[in-house]
Structures are given as C-alpha cells and as structure tokens.
Image 1 (tube, rainbow, N blue to C red):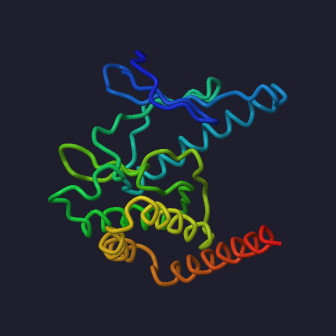
Image 2 (image 1 turned 30 degrees about the vertical axis):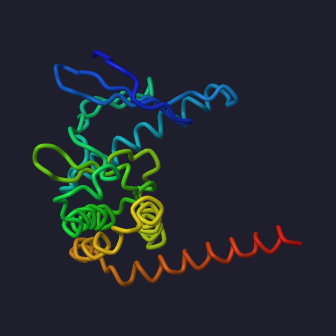
Length: 218
C-alpha cells in the first residue's frame, strides 16, 4: 500500500489517495471516538466498515456503477477501493456541451437500481456522483451512510436529498436534470409513487421551518 495524499477529513472518516497492488486506489479509514468505550467503539467501527463494504459489493452485483472493492480490514476500519477517474457531477453541471437530460437519466438509473436492490444511499448528492473519464459514465461513491432498506420513505429521502442538492447549487439547470432522472428511475422503480412520499417529506420540512420561524418571532 502506498499513500500519496489525504483528500478529505470528516467527523467519521479520513479519505486518502494512493496505490494498492499497483492500482490507483482510495483508502477510507474510519476514525475512533475517544469519548466512547474502547470495545464499543471497536465494534461500531468494525460493523460499519463491514456493512459499507457489503453494500458497495451488493451494488456492484446489481450492475450499479460503484468503485470496486480491493481490500477490507474491519479491524483497522479500512476499505481500499478503486479510484474513479473523473469529476463530481457538481463540478460539470453548467458546462458547455453537457447533455443535462442525459446526465439526469444516468443518475436516475443509479438511484432506481439502488432502490430496487434494497439499498438506501443516505447521501445521494451531486458531490457523490462522479462523471468518469474517458467513458463519460456516472458512478456513485461514499456509502458511509447507506443501509439496507425496503422502506419507500428511505428511497424518497434519497431523492429529496438529491433534489435539494440541485436546488441549492444548480437551480437554473434543475428542470432538465429532473426530466432525465424521472426517465432513468422509472425503468426500475415507480417514480410517481416515490415522488408522492418526497412531497410528504417536503411538506413536513416546510411545516417544521414555519413553526420555528413563528417561535423566533414571539
């Protein structure tokens, strides 16, 4: 194993870039929490490392574009996976000659396949979707919050998070992307059924926000 550099440091894990057995790789290492009992901390991190690796493997088995797993060490809380050459979708939306509807369609296919396979991603944003080079395909990364689920609310939450990421960063391009997303997602799941639940989630969010605003004005 050869570590080149640290890419990202979060509250739960550190991401490194490097090489594993000569392959360009990403190293994801979960962080121990000093405030937790040592045995409990080890169990939590080991279990989460195993679960994340299993979910990525399950995604791959279901023909979903995700990084290939190269090595898992649950005792060191480490996952080594394929490095996806490309750029986050967040960074390419709005460029010239980008077919936004086609981008949305590919993203919708990924979401639909994940949900059909019983996987809720948990952080389905344009920052965790990579447009690969040179084949111009889209990959989903970072399964740190993913879980097994057959609950339509979990699937709707994934779509809600995705729509929020579009609205906050790519608002002027949102409509074309969502049109494509609906086409891709509908190949694997009932888009209208899930969108009904998305609307419920959004209504609850608006209600909570309005209630907070009323309290702050008292």
